[in-house]
View 1 (cartoon, rainbow, N blue to C red):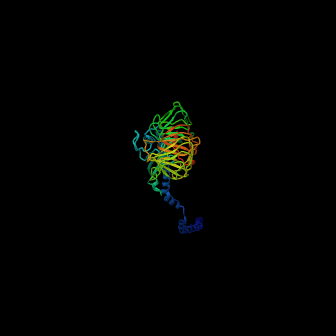
View 2 (view 1 turned 90 degrees about the vertical axis):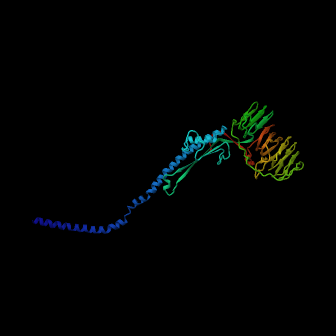
View 3 (view 1 turned 45 degrees about the vertical axis):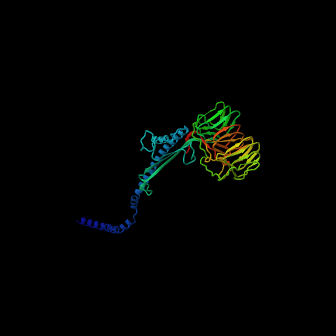
Length: 450
């Protein structure tokens, strides 16, 4: 009994401080816990995650959707590329179904699956085929084909994020055509019959690094009679030609059945003077006055034309004959009402076109609006050993007989038809400095160029 009594008292004495400490800690905890809870920020992470989760999901979805748009754009770009190439090949082959073939190739490559295929479709939603292109480096050039594909794409995730895109337009573009182009010194515009003729011996024509182009689809678009010589960069014709007994030296093989070469001055319009009184013809030794209008101008000896002038000839003849020397700087001769040109007899003629202003680069200008064809005008341009005609000689309704020597580094002849005689030489090397826009044609393999 004694032993038990002391053991009990001993245990009570030992546990009382523990109970007191526990009670103190309990009271302290009840008071301090709310303060700790108020300062605890570990739960904010969960709140932030809850708030940002829709945005994170939206951005992730937007990234996935952007990848989808990129994949669609790549697929449509391939379709546009193949369509442009197909169309350009049809142009090079002078076939009329350029748009049809381009659309067929676009559909073959998966563009606009809503249209049944085969057969080849007549139209595709969002597909545009332009020949010539309406924009870019090759705008207006008939040798090239532009294909534009536009696809509306509804969004899945993009309209749930702050950008809020309901739909987007995925647009692709391709241009195809010859891999290179070359300036032409001669362009005959007639679309049928014989455009260019070299006949007789000796006839030696040298166009150097520029070409001879014809827009006639005739098998005799270029004719060589006798044993003439032609040295040129190339011949580009919408028809064909036969060398016969001629000697033809070309840097690049000729292109036959080609699309028509574009007339660079086809859309240019220049006002004609009114009135231009008839009967005001003038001849040397009197000289034309600046910016005068005449029924004819006849120069038979030495003459220096006033510089920086425009001479209008209505209905008559601008002629230079004899063995004199005739010069003129920054001048333009304008022919209207079926006026024509005759330079014969071996005079040494040095005329240059203006390099600035409304008549920039134009030496002879035949007004299409007031000149009929047929009957086309007959124009003869020749000259002596020192002749140099710098500029564009533009006779869209004229049949031009061109001969004699020419020492200019920029002579571009555009006419309805051209017949060569003598030993003329032509060049387009200095045309940029002279302000002249020569015709250009496509050459080389068909490829994507834009």
